[in-house]
Length: 197
Image (cartoon, rainbow, N blue to C red; front, side, top):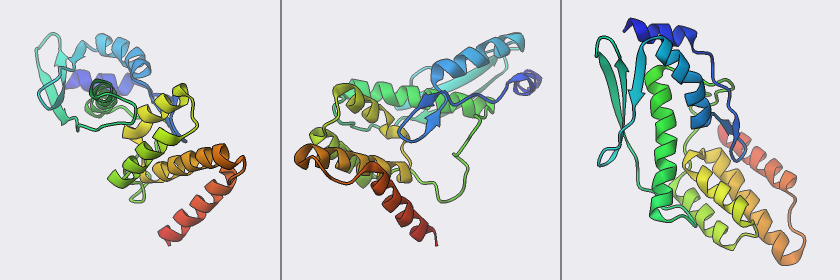
């Protein structure tokens, strides 16, 4: 589709403007603010309706009616301190971002998603451990909700760091001491370096 090629030529890399737990990503409002005017200039528009199991992303050429679509299943995940509707909302936002970027061929600067085979998603065990630690952590409500909202995007490495952070938070609350975060990070860096070799 010629219009899509025109869009891709005009669309700049999108800045990762939102801070997650030890990583940055492009928020949905930032993506939409950049892509919508460029789509319009190229005679394109899109919709993202929900389906029974996920979300569709459909790109339309306004004049010809041509369209490209993709469908992504949204897994059901229970996040600590989030009810089922909040967890679903978090998943929808996450998959809207990635589905739209994938369909349009958008790239973000400082992209670490394709850094190599060593980057893996957080395991089910890591997510369960984070969930357990959040229940007993000393984080305030704002910090807890922020951490919960970032769980769907955690990599294996970031999940380890999140667990270490939560453990340090709890240790400091119980005995006023505990390991400092920089010491925990050094241990994790050493562990990950050994695993790569």
